[in-house]
Amino acid sequence: MASAPNWKNRTLFTGDNLDIMRGVNSDSVDLIYADPPFNSNRNYEAPIGSEAAGAAFKDTWTLSDVDVAWIGLIAERELALASIIDAAGVAHGKGMQSYLVMMTVRLLEMRRLLKPTGSVYLHCDATASHYLKLVLDCIFGASAFRSEVTWKRTSAKGLARANYPANADTILYYAKTQDCAWNPQYRPLEREYVESHYTKIEPETGRRYRLDNLLNPNRDRPNLTYEFMGVTRVWRWTQERMKAAHEKGLIVQTKPGGTPQLKRYLDESKGTQVDTVWDDIPAINSQAKERVGYPTQKPLALLERIIKASSNEGDVVLDPFCGCATALVAAETLNRQWIGIDLSSLAVKLVLSRLQKAADDGALFQGGKLPEVHHRTDIPTRTDVGKLPPYKTHRHTLYGKQEGHCAGCGHHFPFRNLTVDHIVPKSKGGTDHLDNLQLLCGACNSMKGTMDQAAFVARLKREGIGE
Image (cartoon, rainbow, N blue to C red):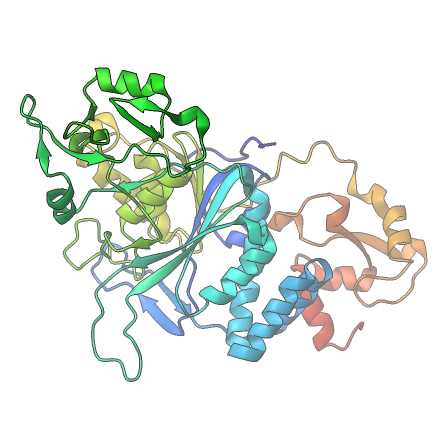
């Protein structure tokens, strides 16, 4: 069941998206578009003088003690995920292992945030796409995989040695359940196709049309086998529907005794349904009006297609790596609610600037007046957990669960010497649920403070404490 959002529409958070997502209510988001770093081993920086000047990030990953601790914590609940991450470290190196740890803990939160009808699109490239697909299969289930989209962002350039030049990104699309929102998208028919197929013109109206087959591919359909216009066949439609279409002038017989055919008008065609190869949306060039100079900016048309396909008006769109806010602008244009998260406060400036440009162009907001965009730097507090008992009342349960041992150093203590600790600190989106509580001795609790559990475990390991 969907939860009410614990944030206002048009909210942009500045901070670590892991902490912020932990504080967002479960089952409250309809669509997530995630465009994280690709583990490209490159540094990105917006050019001086551009609207996004100051935006920069380092897309290089090194396995740390915290990552190792995260792998152990993941293994406690998601053994298959830990196995994939370990295998990536063996096959591709520690950098890939670290990158997958970062992505895994965030994708687990994204699963929790999605409504049962929700979907997630993960933008990546060949560097990590195959590992990420395995991670997504584990988190959402292999049956949740819908499509692997190839976006041809540019024409191949340069001469690659013993290699094909890279010119495409991958977008992995998963739905939380089979009951996901879905609106097929279409692209205009190619001119060559129109000229070769829509060859007939109706004299009375001047409308172009083509003739389509009315025969049923299944020959064993007695209820659809009948005579129509002097021809007995197995038809696609019932006699009543055939008769109605004929009365409207939509069924024609090109010669006596010929098989009747259906008129399909060019001006009624939706076009060609968009498939998994998107080569009709170019990347942003240096002269593009929407360009702000952000290092990895994606075109609005790309996000508009995704949002139209997998959400409806009024739905909630989340971009946890929002950067220059393209997904948020597209969501606003398409009358969706939105929430964005980015480490850089520059995202606030960019989203306001881009929304104002849309208003000035007449695409949004009558009178050019922007609605309020809510900027937050705090961690939201979940409101979907109901009224929980004071967390300290769980001490006896936790003492039995841990058999009197501190969850940090592992030593056994009397009941009075153990204190209740939040595994994910409340300051970072943690709740008072029993699953988020543990008992620590006084020394370990003092050491942990407001650390994440992974950082705490890593410190214990460095200091030779515990197992």
